[in-house]
Length: 314
Image (cartoon, rainbow, N blue to C red):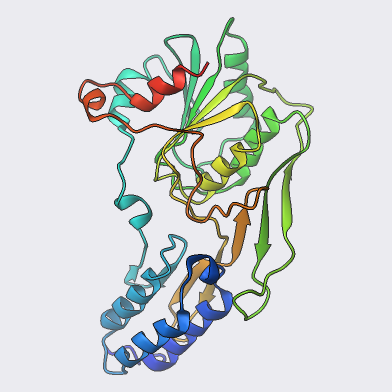
């Protein structure tokens, strides 16, 4: 079926390119010449292409943005950019976690928690798309607060592709002792590549009526920490009691924005820029405080190198 059934390919391509040109936030940061991209791809588009041929060519063009928040969506397919983690070590083995670290675990909502050897708490949270509420967080924190001599908590968010940042804010409220600036965000507000709003601050106010946790925390990361998880790890940088251990996160530092194209397809793209208080832009990931890789020799015998290194920090 030709791509011209509802709107011709040329018109749809022009709209797609222009929508990204006016709304995408990271052209300057990523040093992308979007006009040159147009000159390269526009001659490849014609109205005799099938839907799949046209989709493939548009998706190929969008891959040049190197952004996991950029997706082209048609009824038969959705494009994704995966190279933010595909070209890096996994640094995570869920079977090792299940077999050797989550023994005697409890599950409270999406939070898997236990106490590791050395009297260290451990939480695994696999997706910010699965929310935990305040009552569930009360259960987990009350458990750890009740353990005499607990040295601290390991909060493992490896392989967490994101979801709703509100879950991160809910957690931060429990550990904050004062109003804390996490990061700053500016939003695209005009057609120029540098048309942005003034920066808006994300500030956490400590909770006063819920269970708090005041001890040390080590957060474990890898390249599959993306989007809302990337924001969570970025926010962790604001708290002196938190250390981040593992690999750099995968990134995803722009708020996804959607637009419907003339042929009924839709495109999502990043429409903002978030940076740490020191100005570091988090789009390509957040660096750990201590870089640790999962050792193949450890993995072969069921040891998680990153967890074991984290345990030495308490």
